[in-house]
Length: 272
Image 1 (cartoon, rainbow, N blue to C red):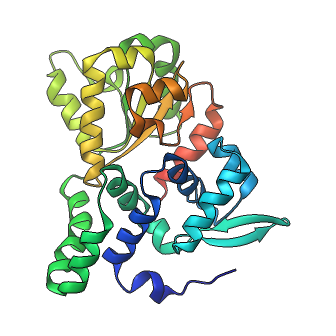
Image 2: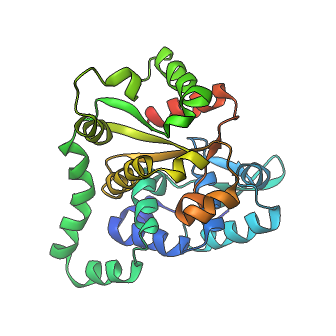
């Protein structure tokens, strides 16, 4: 196993984030492997675990895992006699920044150039992601974006269960009162929620309003103010890909996924 010292990952924050973005590139499969390795706080994931979570075959998992290892983004390990990959604390801590920059196609080379040419230029770039989340204090744990057609068959039950578990949910039925400005309340809810659960469905992609909410969530995610958690409702990956390759490349849960596991995963994210 190749060890990576703290100095390797901590010597230059911007340079290492840029290196991770460059290593991920534009491959959706490699992104899926990276997200599976860094999913939850469990440090070591076997190839079998990663394959099950991503839907990729073992050969692809090993190929992309080797690429990430060579880039110094993960560490190859052994678990139960099987090849596995271990997370690195630096990249776990900066995972959101890495994924957001990769999502907008940020190039690593310019960042490297800035870091090497002038420390005074690179410091503001390192500070900006840290200062922006402080501008809006989250009042809610999650915002649920959905099409009205999906409310009764799925979303209402999900929102009720989350609320019963003590999770603070922005959901129109819970939050809006008679006479409220719909747009103003939704804008406020989007900006003051830590996570945005987006229920993607055929009805969602047919309507403009839910997609406007999704665009707003993407904008907030790019500035590290929230993170999108997709749920596929009566949709296949191929159908999602027709509407948004960016969304199709993300790890998502299906609406028939066990609710207990969904709650456990969400609570783990909220505890970070």
